[in-house]
Amino acid sequence: MLSRPVFDYNSLNETGNPSRTQPIKTSGLNLILISMTILAIETSCDETAAAVYGETGLLSNVILSQAIHNQFGGVVPELASREHVRSILPIIRGALNDAETSLDQLDGVAVTQGPGLIGSLLVGINTAKGLCYALRIPLVAVNHIEGHIFSINLSREVNPPFIALVISGGHTLLVLVNRFANYQILGRTHDDAAGEAFDKVAKMLELGYPGGPVIDKLAREGNEKFIAFPRALMKSREFDFSFSGLKTAVLYYLKRNTEQHRNRHVADIVASFQAALVDVLVEKTVLAAKNHRINQVVIAGGVARNNYLRQRLSQRAETENLRVFIPEPVFCTDNAAMIAWVGFQKLKQGILSELNIAPVSGMNLATL
Image (cartoon, rainbow, N blue to C red; front, side, top):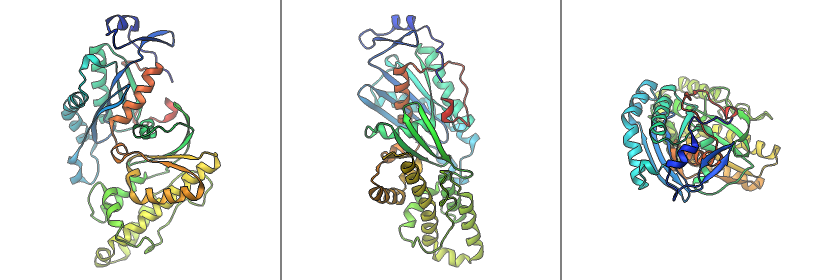
């Protein structure tokens, strides 16, 4: 959906730097710019992030992960909001400094509008609004999921169409990407997200938070066939996921066995759990690609850093004649660089936002 901008762009062009910007026609408005620089802000959960992106590519990418949540075994929304308030301005200054860019050189600000935690999103959105109002430059709202989908383009160019598997602590969905801003959601989780399942199983075993990296490392020492945990919906021809049953199966297994048994076989338990979860992810992704006759697959989101998933999907892709693309690890977890990339494309196309936008915790791709 194209939002009408609140700015007088004819006036904006007159006050801009003519040596850096050229007007282009978009939706009947004189909009900047052939040569552009954009600041992006990401605060959807517990990472405070800012990035600067220009015509030559990514100029800076600063991320602060909030360690305060580790003691609670998960993200505490109120604490996340407060940490964003404390950190957002220093993080933005750091991104601008790293990019050797000043505020008056910015041509727009992109910000995550959703999905995410309302309080966290609000910090980033209000900061972006303030900057845009003060600097008289456009605001570009970006969908967090869309950022993950195109995060691969920070490492290498991958043009649609492709199948995107977005897997993180809060999201698990399969998307058919026909072109930029044209998506079809093929499947999503009915309950827990993949990353959430990792965190909860790690909490059961007292392995710490976040659980994904710990399980990924520990599982390498275990036997993935030690326990035959369920693989929900894997035989279904649909593309939806369900991981609550797998999580519950791990819980019941731990209850049935002694603490001594658990401690002796913890690597086997997490390896078996990880194999069951990854089997479903791989099977559904390959099925979606084959059914839609797409030979490109992009894996994105925090769980895309999982080494076992990368290995299994790459092996399966060879047999199915698929090309698999996975972003660099730093671009898998939440970051502002991916928001900057999407925001940059939108700014060039004149897809802008008004200053009265609000955070949307359940925002999905259909609302773009």
